[in-house]
Image 1 (cartoon, rainbow, N blue to C red):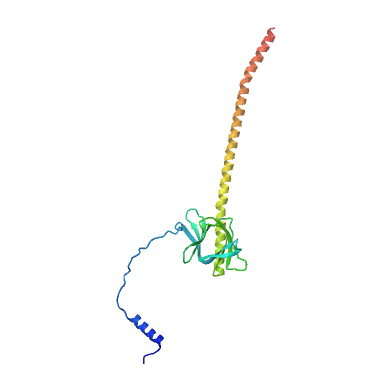
Image 2 (image 1 turned 180 degrees about the vertical axis):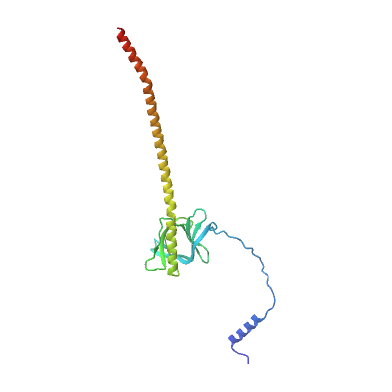
Length: 220
């Protein structure tokens, strides 16, 4: 006996339609070729890639505002060795964080939430440098700790390069001063030698004059 229930009858008709294979093939009207879109990350190597949600502190409103949810990455440049933080929204791929990590930066756990952390940065996400207070929240405590540890590790790794540059500049300055001192000493030595030579050249003349005076005195 056939069922009189509308919903049950509709389900049976749908199942029969799904089982029926017409064999028809629908070709696409327009064929789209795959196009490689540059991301700006081709010369960088990812050293961290985690899912998170990002916030920035609005000073005027005195509140946190969401910037987006997606993947936060730490990218190391293959040539310079510099590391930047980049985060894109998962659906639109819009950049919501983009800044370098330097030796003066530090990240701290957000008070009252061990899944979040905060830091200050000169961010370029909006196309211009802005000093921002950023907060990022992870799904787990472990991911938050991994982010903080890698962030601090990168910041520490930038110190030797900056210190070496200062040391190189200092060494260059000391070398320059040393060369100038040597030139000064050499010049002083030459002046002393010339003076000594002049003095030694004048002694025979004085001796000859003294001899002549003695002869004149004896003849008188």
